[in-house]
Image (tube, rainbow, N blue to C red):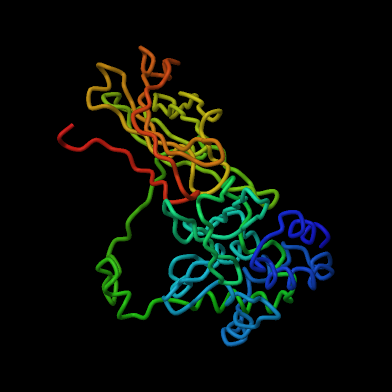
Length: 362
């Protein structure tokens, strides 16, 4: 409770950004101690809630206060994403995690930004627009603030979601489950679903079910991250591709900047570290990190391959496309300095893309 107050005081945040949400978090601090997060997760995972009661909680300004930052009518425009069809987009377990761990996985385009002005003022919110004249931020209260570029001293991304930790503590475990049930019910109407990606109204059951076989055995699992505190982000595998002409070797890229060589042999699979670029790759927040790999069409002859990743660039983030060379045996990176082909400064911590590929024209 005290840390929340200190945060608001220390940053002198404008436009009452925390007003609506901090009131709820502070009033529920005692309840949070007696009901651990696990109790909410377990209850909502195995029980059904009541949609109508959940809807009332969604709009109640003195309880969940979700409507302060989210719309459910497809119009958007608030500090958080529109949730009109969130029940289609996220499975129930992800909806539960999104409420209990709001900073673990922040929706793309809704990462918070902190702006410090030359006069010492601080602004905190989501970037809605940016040009040479000004940056416009929206806080949790829905107010849009325009900050002239000429007065900005520093702009930096925040790993903390506008939705603070502990909002669930204002609810009982049953009420929390009602809220999850309401969010899970927010789906596209059937006529919209049928037009979405050509989905048919009815999907015919196959006479012979398809069999899914794992390509990589359980023993070859790659490391995953665990969220331990607010601001931590989940990182995972972002790309996998066959090494050209290898007949059984793959490169597997991890968001943190590591690349593994996965090889199939007579005994099964073996993996080794191909390269570790984590010291230069920025992956601390948002969908950033090592996101794309591509082999040159003549890779076996020139050993050239290409990476797409983010770096920390002063107070901001930049996207790089860099060319590197593999070692002569093609089993690791050569260690030679990269050749940077493109560097694109980012205004926000999101929308950085990821796919990198050569076309049929080479």
